Every structure is written in C-alpha cells, then in structure tokens.
Length: 388
Length: 178
Image (cartoon, each protein chain N blue to C red):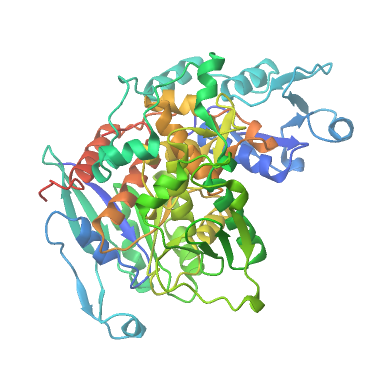
C-alpha cells in the first residue's frame, strides 16, 4: 500500500549526480518513501532535483531551466545555496525535509493525519539498557579470546581530545601493516609474495587466495600486538621486507605450516593488532561504509558483529551512531570496523553518493518479537552446553 | 497456531535438504526419490515435493523450514511455499557450471517474495570449486542492486547454517538482540 493513495506518485529527475549517487537515491526512495516518489528519466519528470555541488552544475541548471521552464526545480547542496524562485534542499537528503520542501513548493500534498497514523505503526527504535552481553559470539569465543580480539577499553567521550587519542593505532607500526601491503601487492601483480625478516616467512598466493604461515596462533598473536616502529624490540621493522617471488627464484611451496584464506587471516590479525581500536585517519563522528557483508562463516565473529553489519551495510553511518543505536560498547564497533577496513570491506564514506542521502533511523521490525525468539533458539543451541 | 516459515531454495545438489537437516529439531520429512534424469549426474536421489523441518521456540511455537524441490519442473510449488515466509535462504552450488546463472534464475523466480522479506545466500561446495570467490559473488550482487549476506557454507555444519539464518534475522531487524 502506498502512502499517497489520493495523490499520484511524484516523478523526480536528478540532475548533476553520478550513476552511483543516482542509484543511492533510487534505493533511498524505494526503501524509505513508501512509493510516494520515483526516480525517472528527464522527459517523464514532474520535478527536477538539481545537485549544485557537481562540476558544471550551474550550466546543467541553466540548460534544464531553459528546456523545462514550467517544471519545478529544487536546488540541492551540502552548503546553503539560494537560487531565486526555487526551493532549497540540504544534502544529505532527509526524507521529511524533502517532503516539506516539495509541499512548500506546492507539488506534494502532505497528509498529516494519515502520516501520523502510519508513523504510529512504525515502531520506534528499541531503547534498552546497554547490552554489554557479548551475545552470540561469546558462545563460540572464550572470555580470554574476546578480550584478545576486542580489548577492554571503556567507551570514550568523543568531545574529549585526550580520550579520543587513545582509540587510534597505526597499522603500519605493526606486522599487520606489512601483511596488508604484501597482500595488496600480491593481488595487484598476481605474484606469490612473501613477508620475510622474522622467524619463518609468511607467503601469499594470490591465485588461490591463500596465505601460508608456519607460526602458531599463539605466536602470531604475540607478534601482532608488538609495535614494530622502534628498534630493539622483538621485531625490527627495518628487517621486515616484502619480497615478490619471481619465476627464476626456484620457489618451492612450503611443506610445513598451514594455509588460510587471505581474508580470514587478515581479519584475525587486524583484530589482534587493534584490540578494539581504530586505524588512524578514521573520524568517528563521520559516516563509514560497509560495502558488503563479511564472510561470517569463515572469520572470527566478534560480539554483535552481525548486528553491526546489518546496520551499516545499507547506509553509511558514524561508528558512534552504530554503538548508540545498538546500545553496545564502542570497542565492539571499532574492532569490527578495523577488521573490515583491513580486508577492504569498510572505510570512511567520502564518495558523493555516500553524502547524498541521510541514513534513516534503524527501525524495529513488526515481527521483532518473533525474530528475537528465533535468534535465541539458534544461539542457545550453538552453546557448547546446549542439548538439542 | 501461527504459520511462520523460512524457505530454502536453490538448484539440485546445493544442499537444501542437508541444511534443513542440520537445523531442524526433529528428523526432517524428506520427499526424495531416486533421480532418473539429468539430476542423476549430480546425486543419487533428489527432492520431488519439498523438505520439511521445524525449529521449536522456547514458547512452543514452531518455525517451519521448507525446502523447495530444486528441479525447475516443480516451480509451480514455489509460490505456494513462500506464503507466510519470513525470508529466503538461497543455496548455490559452487561446483556447477555457471552459479551466477543459478543466482539470476532464483532471484528472478522469488523476486516478489524477496522484495517483501529478504534473502541470504549460502555458497556450498567450495571444497570442490573455489571459483567464483565470495568477493565475486559480492560484486555480482552489487551489480544486481542487492547487498545481501553471502557466506561460504558447509550445509552439514549447523554453525554455518545457523549464521546464515541469523544474518537473515538481523537483515530484517538489526536492533534485535538475544
């Protein structure tokens, strides 16, 4: 059922955005606007949304204005812009603001009673006491493992610079940085690549997507938490090298040790190195993206990782927003993000399309009671002491 | 009594019957028959009606697990099976000739149901064929404007199937918590 049974679907055409932003808007309208609006090609449009932030936007605006003098134009920008005779809509687009602007322009009829009724049907986000229960992952990981993967840092006050400085680490000061670089180089050049210079080498096989190590998990964990920035430590960064194997090197595949999937291995190393911290350069109050779900059946599932993924994969959000929305400690969010970031699945949202629409509030499903009970059943039966 | 169900679909041999068996509280009802056509090349028996298993919740309510028959000639049953469904679990066999063709086929066949609920994808037989990779599936989904969970799954492993279903539940509502 649509929101606007008594008015037709408003057809919008967006000018001055790239294909990715257009797709972001299409999905935004599809999932959040109850079929009130649809994105169409230029000739079918009732209204034009002009993005004034893009290159050549002014020219495009003039062009469309001249071609469709009788059509309504809504001006959009990240900063306030005033164009005589047109309504202004600030980016990222918030659906209520869009409706309000269109209503002010006389091209969209808000139906307060109906909307109110609809709004009452939409459940508000659950406000629960902070969930410090590690959840499902804790059923598979021991307390010690959880501590080694996500640390034990308390939530910080983002406005306190001193506290803020404690949540960052530089992956390049750890073995993680070298591994990440070696994996990138191996994949880029499609060449077997080794990280050498300490104990046994770590070998990356890009064609099979595997990484070979002879070190045990205990040894790897010990190395991963050591900063290798200075001299005189367990590992000297200057001694650690990335070596691309050439055909002439007569390289023989290792006979001892274990092969791991690259993503699985890097994920674990990132968790150990970060212990609930973030890579330097990430701004916690600005949105980050998750471009796809991690392969959860083959990686370490830290506390609340599935919930964080579900929350982040649809829209970029800030890390603080996720912790607040899910009512979980910040370190769980930071640990997950760092691991996803190191395997190339997550990063700070900087693309124009990421800033096009505002992430809607995470809403509770009408079936949340049922879903929770199914979840409880699944996780309870996963516990080692469970009787099926 | 409520009639909630989770629907498992996918091509012949993708592991639907095994996945339901891994998760079901009771021994599942199987409607397998000796394979007699091209299916025979992939497995000895195949599902001709549906697989059925249940998960009993703490309050006694039953969640029904339905597996669609993999052969396309039974597709008339698919729409019936999805009625009242919570979501779709699509299992793909990575050892088949063109898993992306299977992906397209099942996404199209269950388009309406997916739009109303959600879909999660489990890729089986990675030990037989490790290509396409999970990353290639992610890209394929992105191209189809889907951002669904896609995991490598061993249908015999309860943990794998459970994680897949959990991702389905969280996709429907990230706020829920055990």
